[in-house]
Every structure is written in structure tokens, then in C-alpha cells.
Amino acid sequence: MFSASGESNAGKLLGYVAEQSLVDHHCHGVLVRDADQATLESMLTEGGGWPGGSVFDSGAGFAFRRLCPPVLGLAPHAELSDYVARRTELGAAEVSRRFLLRAGVSALCVDTGYIPEPLTSPAELGALAGAAAHEIVRLERVAEEVAEAGVSAAGFADAVRSALAARTASAVGVKSIAAYRTGLDLRPERPSDAEVAAAAGRWLGAAGPGWPRCADETLQRFLLWCGVDLRRPVQLHVGYGDSDVDLHRGNPLLLTPLLRAIQPTGVPVMLLHNYPYHREAGYLAQVFPQVYVDAGLATHNLGARGPALLAEALELAPYGKFLYSSDAFGLPELYYLSAALFRQALSAFLRTGLDDDLYSERTVVRLTWMLCAGNARRAYRLNP
Ligand SMILES: [Zn+2]
Image 1 (cartoon, protein in one colour):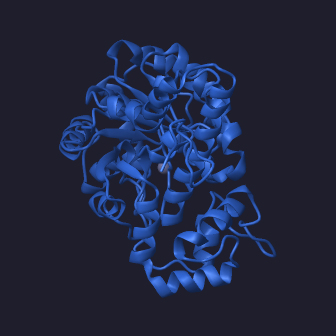
Image 2 (cartoon, helix red, strand yellow):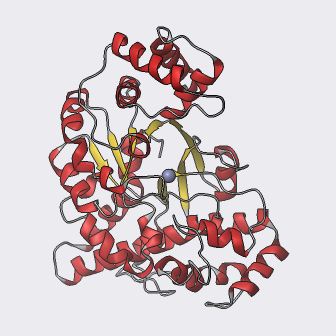
């Protein structure tokens, strides 16, 4: 219950923020198996464990230990061994259901392009969360599926275009992981089919048996322009990621010429994660009308520093172009943790504005809707 001033009696969150459901515009599937302590250590952050230490001794770890145990009926700060025992007792399905329901999301946009082990499908994830689930198709994965199925260099461009048309028939967007493959220093021009055929020939000729990893600047650009042609939002991994990314090549400012070239199409470009370049991303959202930004992944990795992150991300970014995402993968705790920390950060941000008389309570209601759900619903054309 909330007072007339929007204060939640239950906690320190602004009531409006506590009550507003979220649209998580970038996340992945959740594990279908139980997670033991080693799994929690390996999946909590973008790094893994190391001898003699624990990833739980971190911003993400202490936020996890403060917020997650109560969802399983334990006291805050429970020992990890007790937490894992309780997790096992409840079973993976019940643990997932509890955390996903508590995240308070109304819609999820699920990246289905990275499945290193069995994960829930978008429909299964949506059912656990009590939310509508939509698919985001990963461009590189489609190109790699086309290559695996067997294609000539000359036929590659058309084969990718028709595979993408089929794969995205019911998807709400596409995603590029060029940051992981070539970095974001991409030339702006749309490559010709002859250039694509030449690049595909080099790639297909060089690809040995097994995973044909697409990591060619011309092909990355081709895939991005294919995504633009589909006229759905194009997500781009930016900044923060695991050790497979060269972070210095993931600065979104490297995208400036490409964003300028895409601008006339009006197709939304969604810059994901962005940390530690969230201020640069905010600048791009300000100057390019079709650019949207989030602070996914960093929101839970920064733990108690979430309010500082959000305040920095919103220094320049128009409030109408900032979206919520968890970038949660595998552990159901991360969907909840990210949502809880985002609500804390947003609540602190809006409360400061209210205290400083920057805006009225009526505006707080409107901003809460925009930042939690409305901006994503508009950009992805999701039904309310
Ligand atoms: Zn992701």
C-alpha cells in the first residue's frame, strides 16, 4: 500500500516505482538445471572464479547475498552453502518461478542466439515470469546457420536475407554482436552483394570443421544493414562483456559514422549495456534521434553503485530513450537482482529530483512509466 505521496510503506522505494512493472528489453534464457555453488560462482558476473577467492566478494555478490536469500525464505546475508542447500531443496523450476515472478516484469525480449547449454525458450521464460515473451534474433547466429547448412559465396547474401526474413517473422528485433567479433569501428557504407560474396568466400574458405564463427568487418556491416532493412529495432552489444570482448573496441563512439548513415532510415538502434561507456552512449542517444540506450548487465554487477550508474547514464540521454534491461543469463536470481537494483536506483534518482523541486509528482509518475516500460513498448511496438 502507498500513501498519497507515492511512498511505499513496505520499503524505501517510491511507491510508483515499486508498483510499475518492467519491460526487460534484453535478456536470455534461464538454466533448466539446478545451480550448485560452482555454477553460481561462474555465472554471477562476467568473470569466473579464481583459486583462493570468490566472485561473491564484489558489488554484485553482496547485492545478491542481501536480496536473494529472502526470496527463498532465508534471512538476508545467509551463508552461500545454506543458500545452495535451500536452492536444491526447492528445485530449479520453483527457484526460477520465484525469482522471475518477483522481478515484476510484464514483457521480456529474449536473445535466443547464445545457448551454450539447455536454457528455457522465450515462451517458457515468459510463463515463469508471468510476462509476455518476445524473441530477438541474433544476426551472426543466422549467418552461421546459413554457412553450416552449406552455401556458395555468391549465394550467401540472398541466403542470409531469406533466412533472416523467415527467422524474424515473429521476432520484435535483431541483435548484432559485432563488438565481440570485429569491434565497433565499422565503416558506414552498406556493402554491395559483390563485396559480401568476396568476404563470404574468404570466410567460408577459411572456416574449418566445427563452429564457423563469423568475424569479418564486411559481413558484420552486411548483417547490420540486413537488420536495418527488416525495419525492426537493431540491438548492438556495446561495452561491458566477458573476456571474449576487446572492451576498448566496444566504445559506442566508434559507431558514430554508422549511426549517421542509419539515421535517415529511422530504424531504432538499441545500444546495450554500454558500461563503462554509458556516458558516451547517453551522448549518442541525445544527438541521434533513432538511438536508444540502457545500462543492462552493469545494473546488477555494480550492486550498491546502481544509483550512481543510472544518474550518470541519464546525464545526457533523453529520458524518453533510456530502457530497462537485465541482460540476465542462466541464473534466475539475476532477473530479480537486476530489477530490484534498477528500481532502487530509479527510485533514488526520482526522489532526488522531487526533493530538489525539479519536477512534480505527476511528472514522476510519467517518468516512471517511460523508463520502466513505456519507452521499450514504443520502440519495439509491443502491445500495452
Ligand atoms: Zn546479453
